[in-house]
Image (cartoon, rainbow, N blue to C red; front, side, top):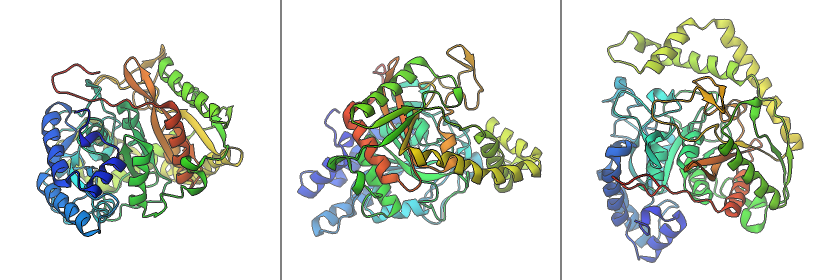
Length: 463
């Protein structure tokens, strides 16, 4: 397994395809075999797509022979089950859509097809992406490849588990409230939320509309950048040039906030993020410890998400299909929303974005811990951290959502371990500065040298 192409960096995989020493069809079959091996334990996939993958791999093989291969030709990619693949079921994690076959590809999937990707399967999500853990009524919870007794996070938890367990090279996810970055943190991956509004999944599922971004889960920043380039249609990798890590990024002014809003954080998790910040300083960047004024995001995020859920899916409360407790509770809360509360949230959104954006007049990047804890046991969200009570909803992962509300690009990358589980750091960039942010992340990644691959093996204890 250590030298399986499923674990190779994207560049090495593509180079082998181009040189003819490796076949995309062969790798596609490896991916399906690996899915069959790990999925009964991890529940990362709701629907493997072996026939589609086989056809796409054969097409990629032909494209390499005739010189027409796209940037992801033959690369195994998993697709979060919130995106449509024509001719395949899109469950959205709900019994209400368990048999709904998509009539078209959503925008992100169309871009993957054009790039030559091999789509190996649809990955599990929370119901309508409404939870930061991946549990629904379609089957068991998605488990963490580092310890199957723990959560992979959510709502892109299936995508994270698919990449972290070596079933594919890249995972397609979406992030409306940390849904890429939380599972990336828990599963030892790079997770990138691009600038809000920069990538549209046209013709796709709609939720978290004022906050959501389409983005990658990957094992390295370079691989994440490649998928982001495909999704954005940006031929130069999202503007990498001026800050490309390979040519030496300029000295940046970095704001380090160890405990945003004063929220409690596990000491070892906070320590891993702090150690990453010392590496940024060692790279020559100007790092300042700051207190960030991020309060108020919950009063904006909650009402706007609930209002959209009520409008789009309120009819399900009286429907035939059973709903998860959390989605039922969301729809019931949506019924009780006062119009004035929603109007106030809409009115406050622009002001919040401007308030956070002011920090980028003084700083080039903001750094925070990615989450407040490591992956917790399935079904057991922490009620206290470091002896301090926390809310069940956001207590374990309060640091992602403010930047969904503000709209800034944010990337999470592994920073080490806490009690044998991955811990991560979050880097936030200015509006539209996706390329420079990824270059900073790539520089930090190279400096830290953290590669916490799970190497999950069925029947073996977690590493």
